[in-house]
Picture 1 (cartoon, rainbow, N blue to C red):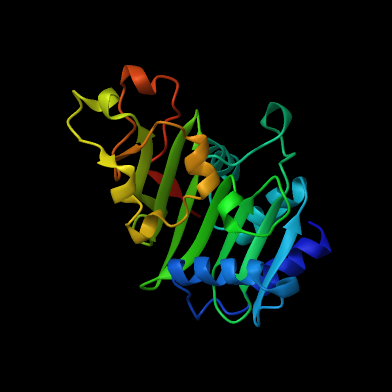
Picture 2: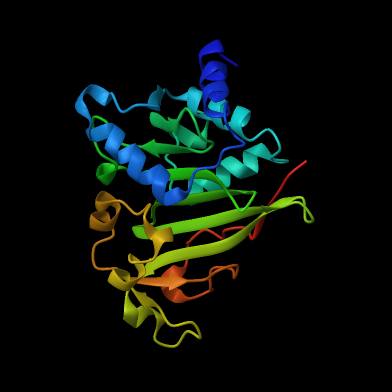
Length: 234
């Protein structure tokens, strides 16, 4: 592991006993990016390059039992990887508050000036004393977001939310009815969907909210990755 990534992780984890809420993390990150020369007090960002993305995730989540499977999960949720799914990733950025726990990892092709243009987001927060992972991205041309909350009894991160973008007619005969995207976006947990993600999703302006259920075996979702219902820890 490089000394630079170790230093970044140490900064991120410095105040892990002082949790920050997702909405506050998001709003403070956006305020930081729009501030003059990124001078927002207490908030910082760092760039990650290729394999540094893997290094950061390994050091940030040392309790994940099968790290390669965890990377595969993040890829299925929209994290961009390089040739043959090896450890060469699209560059990413880490945004974090020096005084509170939690961070955001985002991938963005253009200069980092706003969260509105990001292609993938992983947010880590501690809520009600429980570590929580949330992701948002685009997979197979569809919006997709997830939430995993750590459960010490199961020794795993348990999936508590999985949301997939669909067209309403695709779900006509399915037991769970989709939610209009505009209605879903009023939910605080949907805050991670960026404007760029919504634009790339095209006409899929409905959301199938599956919670902890597996992705249904439906014609319109053939080839869509199966997202695990838990991620085991050591």
